[in-house]
Length: 289
Image 1: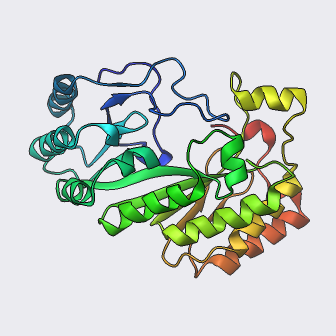
Image 2 (image 1 turned 135 degrees about the vertical axis):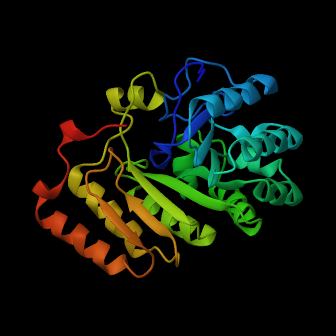
């Protein structure tokens, strides 16, 4: 396959065919993120996209999952997205799902009819970053959207039949906003009731504004006990029946898995055990992005 620059994908897309539909991220100013900094956002020429799928058909015997990269495939014209999805369906009749990242901005420009058509043509799920349900955190981290808009766009995706996977980041508010970040993030998840909830734990990446803030003392990272406290507050306030909850990313100190709300108490017991025995946590040297 032909790739331009670094390519990122959700952990669950490890075995997917990944084809770049756009280059980079249409927002690309979040203070904590270093992804896509080496390239400007651009729409990849449509014929190149389609040719990559034809190359993949000649290369791979079986393709059951496709991920449309880079950071925001939904910003393309609806007609072009239809063509891409039609091509996937024609070339890979065995394909079970097609997914992509989506931003609140790209979801907003799609009409309900367009989203329903995308689902009919095979777009089964989108991944959207909430990061925090606390507006003060979102403003500081330059997310570009407040929580109400992110929630609204998540609800829009769901009501049009596309599955939704939403991520947030433990520790993003620092010690000062620990409680608000936890509780308001849980409330945002509850309002969207996504099929999947994913939690990462903050890691500071070089060449980001957050890196500079930590270096100068403007931003303080959570200690391991504070991470557990924030995680407990979040899980205690979750009420999102049916959502699959995953906190098993390489950045996480503690692994939590379950389906809400049935596994909520079991996850809280796991957190409590870790609070009493920090040796249960992933060593710092083993964490990664």
